Image (cartoon, rainbow, N blue to C red; front, top):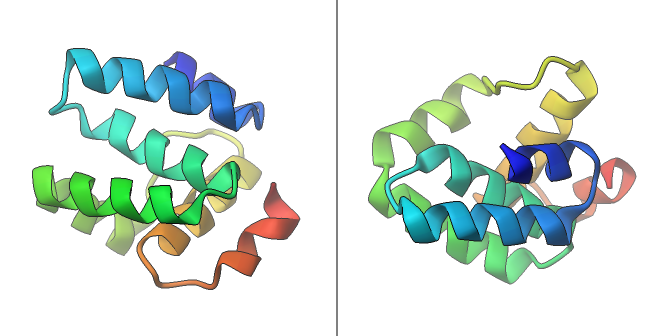
Length: 104
């Protein structure tokens, strides 16, 4: 949850740190993988975001497929949902990384 809070607050480096810690303890936790992917895009580290996306999709293919298809997130504010969806799609290679600029 601390990783999510840092994503919402646009403190992406801290979000990466907390998502990584969560995955160290529970590598099957796909929600932390979603957050790691989004925080890497937020930090403008697209290569790491894509690598995290590929690894997450390999570990939790159904969760990643559903997330891409539905766009459903747990964020209550529409602007956080939009940012999470755009960032996730960038990591998936479905949107140009420049789409993140206005949302960072």
